[in-house]
Image 1: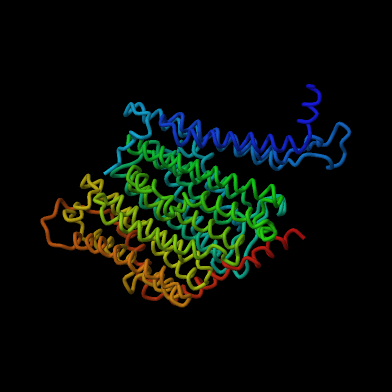
Image 2: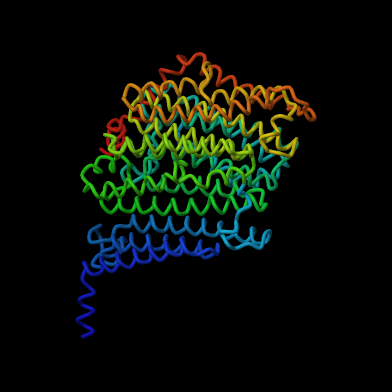
Length: 129
Length: 484
């Protein structure tokens, strides 16, 4: 029984659907958090979840399980049956940028908390006139 | 000389800072300014460019990154580098009165901002554009929160949050483009975008619009702008208004002209731009804080630019180039002047203009305000005239009416401010500027007057630049020609 389920799940089309549905659900979870959470750290976490869902979506949709890593060696002498390295390079860059922005945002939030003791984004209204 | 210097030099500068700091307090400041003067001179040396220049970085397109310097992008590069130079020169004298803490970091941020703004304009790789989009964003977030008081940090948090959401939309658009077209090169994307299913084209266009919409400050995605302007320091506001938003505007329309050369959504975008201008001017009327008021005024001008660029018409784009030039200079004058006023009188309330005792500064500010309004003999007039003329010729009377009503509202508050500056009231203590600051402000004002009184001096260049920006086919041929 388990083998049947696993062989069903191992089909390309099923994997693609799992990736699509999973990453879009994660995107919606992040969006839900962004819209409903008021604590600034939770808001940043929601943004990070949304970003991660996009990374999973992109890697998942461009990855082929039958292909190898794009590295010559171990018997591979030509660039055939290899996964496209560009999405991986792109996502690596995007992860670094996302992490930098997140760290910056949290450091702003910490400094702001030290000055005002406020963590609720609805109460951040120094400039409402 | 290579166009890559515009990006490489400011970024390399950051690595040289520890060495430059050993030269004393002024080492970093002088080195940064000298480098910017060099870059501005380099940008002007490209003005005589006959043909667009393609700079390939290590690997030829479509795999590698390349920069395209044509008549349209050279205008923006020259504008950004010269305005940044003038800003730095102004700050060199301003810092005698008030300087930022950790000045070395401040200069690093100025240079990363310049490098990323230029990178956005020159790059022809959409992922590379995303990287510059984020570098410009990060530099701007830090500059916003630089003073680390509650207001500045709050503004920084708001800016960063909206920027992060914008980047999510942009990343998703780039991913969909890569999955469906298999390239990140703008020319290849432009060539194959037509073949995509209609729904996918609409989805990608919408995601790109949402990604860039936050950054180009278009209604209704511009709710965060006034808070960021109020929270950040006045000097920095000048950079946001003159450089950052203009770089995003250019890259948004550059991509739009390449992907949708026949202007599928142009009517929607024109009316959105006009509406953005109207809403901003209505809100500006109620403002009592000068920084917020100038922020809404910037939003209004960006709305006008958005409508003009959306028209896919070379005359309108020519007018938009004039407005970019006039508005960047005028806002730079206003924010630099306001920083002096704020420092001397400790207020940015609108009523402070009745009390300031600075005839020279008042006169220069008056010229800038009148130029933004579009009064004849000043650069802003030429831009507005060209845009409205091409709207009339294209039969866009609805958008024209909205823009005229918005301009009327704009004149209400700008004439009120002009009145405050000129009325004979009892004034406060005399605010005297340094001679160099006076020269710099006069130079900027002189540019507005010269471009307004003798537009024919730059009209040919602007017309050519507008045609180059619109000509997607030549751009594609230039890059794909390098592939073969």
